[in-house]
Length: 517
Image (cartoon, rainbow, N blue to C red; front, side):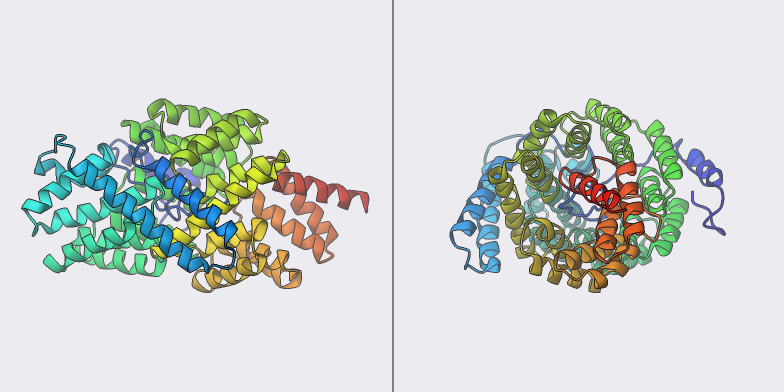
């Protein structure tokens, strides 16, 4: 799909490859996504949103998890001296026990269990009810404990369940399933690709790349391994390598999963036009409700990132017409509603999302909506839940430093924000970690040190209003008034509603700069 010899070749050459391949739609599985404490800016990174076909309904213990998180947050406020790691472990035990209890209840309901042939099919992860699929796999493995393929499929199902239900306590279960599969068959590519996906879900992108490469040595055509390799390279900041990996994936397993990754790599380089055209071509080939919801949501996120709220809402409406409970579309629609002035609709939508799956992104967005309206008490409740989620994630092996840095810089302990941002930058140098480190340095009064990182965050051409806002504020603090005016104005022109609080602060800073001219 992508140009081979010249990465800057005309976009039409790339699109011709897309058009040739789109006549045979591929099965989608969710690219890994960043667990953002800000609105999701891109379409690759750490998991945090539902995969196509897996965001159904309000079941799966969402209310129980929210209640547990709220109890944890309340306890943390009463006992500030209690070490966060200890709280995280307690919360992890509580939620894991709850998950086990729910699973046991399902196992004893007497409900129909799908036949083994369905249980062992990886396609069940994206085309059927995930909880039912897991129950079927568990039933099958009780009878056939040496079925290494089913153990790897169960591991993948746990990864998907953790991602779609905001429950990182499933990750250790996934790890054990993959280990069992590999103990039975050390070179099976499905388990190796699954371990790559699990590592990416835990934000361990070096291991994600390592396991993806191992899987591809066994099976060069493994779709999951090919796509996870692209994701890992993106999240390690190796954007040129990621583009080459997307080309390779396109040659071997062309389809919608590859095209969405290619679009994101182009967006990171500022080529929004090509990213949009590739996604539109992918949408035109989508047939299943899961594919339609997923690709339409990607288009909605791209439009929102460019400040085109009407187009974003149109895409989200199409996604929700395909799957009315698709959480990324529900979250995206709420963001677009907030940015376009529909605060009531945004509040309703975000409360619905966090009631099901209390992930950092929608929690912070909801908190900032409350705070922008002057309700600091409700806002602080949402920010406390972010701390609780982060503790749970860390207790289950997820590297949450980027989330900690972004949330704490604006709504928590600034020193811990800086420690987390430095640690994450040492692990991987991406535009997102550069932005997080720049902002954490700024809120700690280290603006001269912050400025080079703010410049790195915008160096690839990625059109992100929050990055431009952060750079403008830091330039203002370092006495670069002309550059500050330029980048604050650019942020507001690109996406005037990029954040309920940030956009307002950007307008105030720009007004002050204009008055000082």
